[in-house]
Image (cartoon, rainbow, N blue to C red; front, side):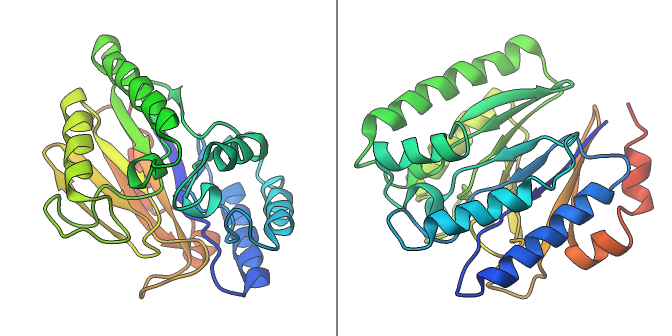
Length: 268
């Protein structure tokens, strides 16, 4: 069994103090979970101020301070979003992210699960950094070849922009990747055996399936654009399946994980 928590910390509007308080509540809820999550993912838009905007350094320092409160036994996985590297990333904005938060794409194993973290901005608009997009695409092809060779239990992707919100054939939107791009990537991932893609960006919960690929869109810890509550998604992985559930911060803080998910954690 593997379990982890995911969230999109996108901090919108002028209510930065409230965003920080919500993130502190999320950290406290995660630290209380038993058993401890194997890791904690923030699916992009770590801060609100985009590259070149005022308050970017201050917001970065605020978030770094809060994240130091995460239990040291719970690794942090940080995904780059459009507010982190820009809607049209450049070599400079990507380098800034790397220097501040770490690699913008990488892979890691948790038990028999291969996890791939991707920079989805390269698929949104790589016009100012085509070489960086090409490098990630080549790296991803190499990683996907490992999926079959190692016969991993599951292969899972974390990225900021969803491939799609509800259907592979939906219209192009600010919150998804364009139809031609999403189909190419979805076919590549599904064909290689990837079973789930987790993303944020939409500030609402959504998702759908394509072939055997589960597209999971989680709302934000902070700014909500729909009717969902500030929250986190808890993911439980067994050898046979992936089960995930979105919790409000209050629910997770006060009640923790429900009994059925706890039972799944006992499966091998």
